[in-house]
Figure 1 (cartoon, rainbow, N blue to C red):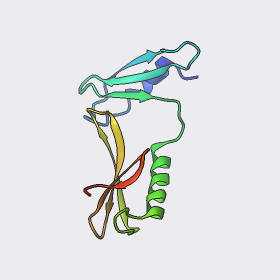
Figure 2: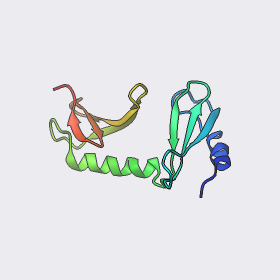
Figure 3: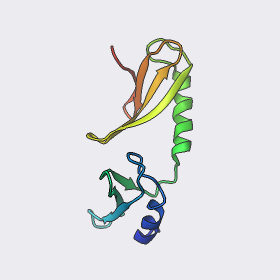
Figure 4: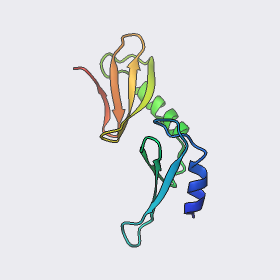
Amino acid sequence: MITLEKVESIVNHIPCPICLNNRFLVSLSCESPGSPCDFHAECQHCHNKILITQDTKSMEEMWLTINQTIKEQGCPKCGDKKLSLEFLCDLESEDCFFIVKCKDNGHYSRFNNAGFRYLFH
């Protein structure tokens, strides 16, 4: 079981993905009785909020899985398999997604939990 003290010690060694500062305020949120509590870290510089989970799947593993999936499917516009991948988050909506660029034709697509779709129809 992860403790508040452990989370606090870990996040202060990790830079904020927005401003690269490493001063976080960690809070514990226990909204539902009987449900696990969530840890939230807020950057004390830019106020970006991060949900800390006990999910052991690392970003590197997820990146490899997503990269393999998009290359199997190919560009939604032209079918090309030469694609580059970039992970982005919108601060206002807190929506995170992958932008996929078709290297040869310059097509851009968005890959998220809703699927893989071509941008700029």
